[in-house]
Amino acid sequence: MLFLCVLVIGGFALYVMTPAERIRLIQKAVPALLLAKNTAIEIHTARDPFFDALRERTPWPVVTPAIVLLNLFVFVRMLFGDGSLSDPDTLLAWGASFGPRTTNGEWWRLGTSLFVHAGPLHLLTDMAGLAIAGLMLERLVGHFAFATVYLGAGIFASLASLSADPMAVTSGSAGAIFGLYGLLLASAGWGALKRALTIPMLAIKQMAPGMAIFLLYTLVTGRLDAAAVNGLVMGSISGLVLAWGVSERKTPAIRSAAAMAATLVIVIAAAVPLRGFTDVKPELARVLAVEDRTTQLYDKAVKQFQLGSIDAEALAQVIDTSVLPELLAVSTRLKSIERVPSELKGLVTKAEEYLRVRAESWRLRADGLRKHEMPMVQRSDRTARAALDAYDAIKSAEDKSVVGQ
Image (cartoon, rainbow, N blue to C red; front, side):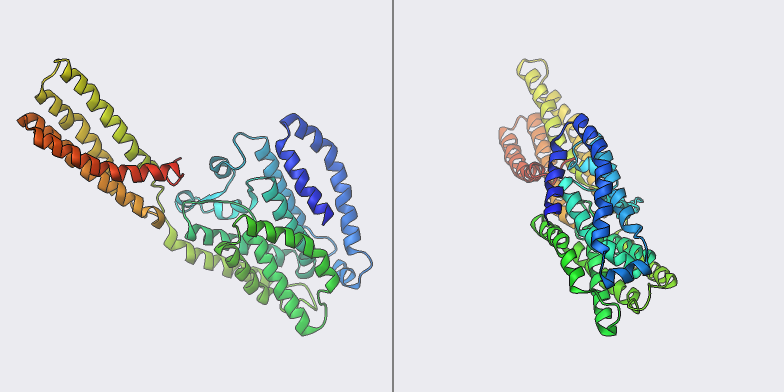
């Protein structure tokens, strides 16, 4: 537990260091970390019949260290790259999942998002939750079965996140790690039934600190969601298949391959209805911009009218030839959008209402100017206020980051 706390604190220190300080620290720390890792593995597996049996079954865990190193490699590259670690654009550049991009041909993001983390604490807690259970589980079920559950549960959890909130930028290994915990439960259950190679209380005590830190962080940060539950369920179901007979031997490779194929079929079947989500944020931002642009255009013409440079007919022509076409173009683009995420449908409706009522107010103003009828101009002002109520709702959503980049 103390070692994990030091990792978390050290991660925060690394985050606030300058790039030059990080390079010097990494150069000095890598040899020490390798020595510490080897020592920890020896202590972890020494003088215990259960771990002796695991060493005989699978001499060296390969997949777990590879996953940890890959996550660390990506994170270090992100540290020295451009942009803030928590910036959605940075996360997307490194492979995070985002509905409008993932469902429009970039399905690989369901997998790559498992290796992208938004900060040092996010990374360290995920790796603590992974490594502490992974080193034991991989030796118990074998490399192929372990990788099958990790990737299968992780991709399925990513898909669940995508379905629940297509507009969210998602990253991290939580779903995959919960899948491993499902595998752990299944393995423990089969071992208890067979009463052969069972997971002893000593192993559970050794895994408890890392798992507790991971679970606490996941709960506090709100990542204990439907995706995590789906990862746990997928891992448990896969575990019931893959861990059967694990008390006597590692999971056969053919069974692992069949489980991975079945998982892919399930993922593909679940992904088909999600194809083609549209990112409507740029269109909503365009709606906001058209109000400023057309208002400035009209105000400039009003000043010319007040100076006597143009007459009322010319002022009405500005509305007809410049203002209304802008509104119509934006409205046409907005109406052509398909597959709008459910959480943004309300804003799209507001935007359509704004464009319709705002165009009506401009037409009334143009007619009032041509006919020199002030009541019609005043009526256009009242209609414009109704349109701007819808505009304000969209603007408020932008300020809350519902609409934006």
